[in-house]
Length: 238
Image (cartoon, rainbow, N blue to C red; front, side):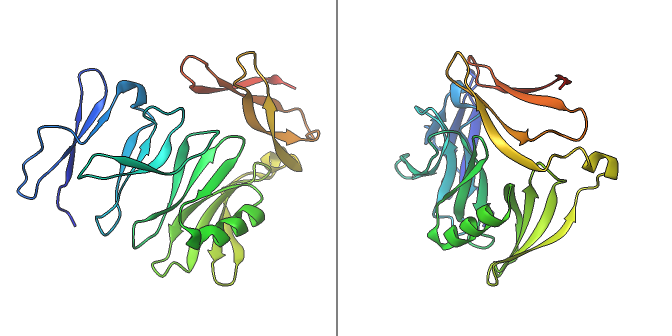
């Protein structure tokens, strides 16, 4: 349906208010949801499912990390569906026809997929085991039998795989272009490493294990305590 049901308005302080729109097109005078400026980057409406009965949002208000939630438009109350104790919820796995969110991912050392709908738990378990790296679904057939997965193993070029849900098989389709000279720079193994910091926040980054065949550079991920923003810097050669 293309019927307008919600409107957003930025507040003078840098936040955002969400208003209901009545059937006749009139906008409510009071917002159904208020987002303060401190949550402007981590709280955001995601939209309705196909039926129009469920409204999803990422919600970090009065929380340390953003979680997947639903909003009751009649009462303005939110309900948490799933959350991670370590990181903000980010990527979504959405059913192609119903629009229902079936899983979400939170990135800490690696992408950690969290189940919302038990119908896809077996698929997530299979992909977590077989992908051998971080993955995300880029496309799903209407009958939901075939998925296209983008897989990043760090030790090789990013590749696209066809996943057959019924047969539980993955077939590599193609990878991103990479010259043979660059391919040799990839190490044979990768693992996530955590470096403790004085602020006890920790610095995390998937790191290559083993000695590379040629001089390489160290990629460091730094979390700034004041803003919790992350900056990646390329260091001097190892």
